[in-house]
Length: 322
Image 1 (cartoon, rainbow, N blue to C red):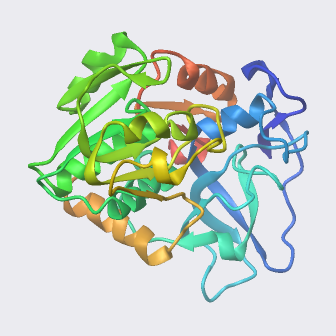
Image 2 (spheres, helix red, strand yellow; image 1 turned 180 degrees about the horizontal axis):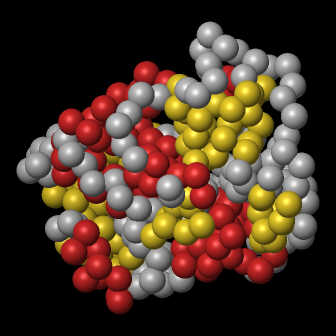
């Protein structure tokens, strides 16, 4: 099969498109024919060597959509079943989805039922599921004014679309470090854009809820912009900082405020199918911002890292494009 293998950490050119053996099914694992997958910032971190637990060579890719090719659980995962897989140790402890086929633990494969085409479905798993779970944890209402820190990311755009579809009267403000993205974000549907400089929001505005995608690097500053009884949901680490250091919950939390989190490893197959049904019911446009082919992985990484990168980037295999 064709796959993209990284032999050593480095720039996007380290992602090599080549022939590799197709994985052989083993007990408790099934083989998925990969139709497509999204590109994630965590894969860029890993490519750069910033994920110390990941050993090279490795096939990256922490999510995929596809169909069951060979199964060891024919009752739950029959051959031909449409499936999604997210996270676990996929693309980290074992080879992931940057390939035509991927071998996955059965408990990490989720049967889904949806009429979405492969490109749209490939945009959903990691991105929309994280946004949806975070939205639920923020306990949104139409009266909220919400800040999305890291607004131009795929998850940021997904959150905006879900929030506006579910709560039409809600105010959603986006933040960005790049002034040139302001008009793009307004065109995407944000009500207002706040600029960030040196990990500080350049505003005195405060919000009832904050969706924190930059993560530990900016959480302290986010609390300075949270109303009393407000909620911050930290679901990303775009600031390249993994841990919240020198944090005093007594003094650093805003008065009478709340901190929660959500991440895509918290997978519930019913919630996943609920999300897919909601996307169809509310006619939410989940079209990816860019679609690449498997042999274009370096270009996909370059685009996502560039100042032009906005929204969700997906890769489709050849059989999903026919």
